[in-house]
Image (cartoon, rainbow, N blue to C red):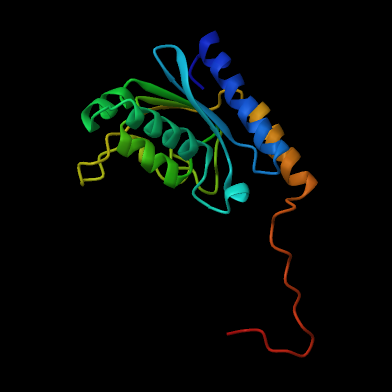
Length: 182
């Protein structure tokens, strides 16, 4: 992990607080904050179960709240793009492929994350979407630093999965004597 100043840890603690709120709501405990010029301007936590919408990851919640606020304030698309280019995201777990792609498309400046996402990570664990340059010209890429307070993020995730996900589908049992293959 690259060396991080106290400011990075301060913002990551705020992201961890959002993750704890997600855990308290029986959501996968991932949280984030978006910072511009040293000030938190948006925050989010996973809300996929609450909203019954699989796209409501912490990052998407924070991005959407910013877009809504900036639209109310009358910012043009160019102004929105400029504002995003000045933003840093602090998130407890490596953004998934969906979120990393969104962050690349909106042009966020950089991302600091806690633990890697070995199943769905879009910042190098599975795909390096933070690197940009997919040939389509739309992806801008962003700086990325992982491992910030990773043990705290893993601890929250472990707590969630050890208690069992009450919202997970019940396992299917094979019926004796029945052919269940396709």
